[in-house]
Image (cartoon, rainbow, N blue to C red; front, side):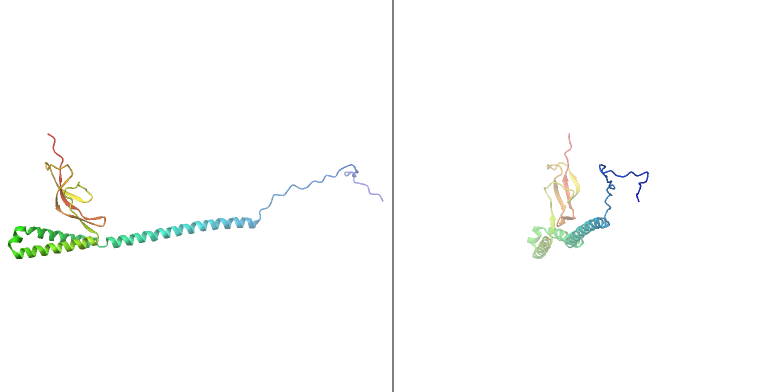
Length: 192
């Protein structure tokens, strides 16, 4: 029995080369594990960033709280100090009301005056230990941060803006103003 080739197909001859056509290379299909790994790495990076931000914020809160606590303890006595500077100023006025002549003439006035002076010096020493300083700016340049001008005096012979007289001393607590110094200031000379 002989087989005959169908009409559409021709038998292969030895001189003909057989060409095999390979299918086009299939596009690499992504491995779902690679995609999952990429998503997990992104999530890790995101969580690490959030963690670092939270740590930084916590440190900032600690620093702020520490600074606030220091300022609170440093300035906690502000109201008390304001009240006490009035006591010192009253002692100063009482001491200056007893003239040196009256102190030499009457032993009682001398003892009272000396007692007032010692009390005032003790209070000023306590103030200094606790960061309260007295401002008595006579002869200095007027500074609106620490002085309150009560009057301007023309014809004083001093440069304009110079403190001529201190009517009431001022006080600071560390670097904050408790009470401004009440002063008179040299005025600008009028031009003729």
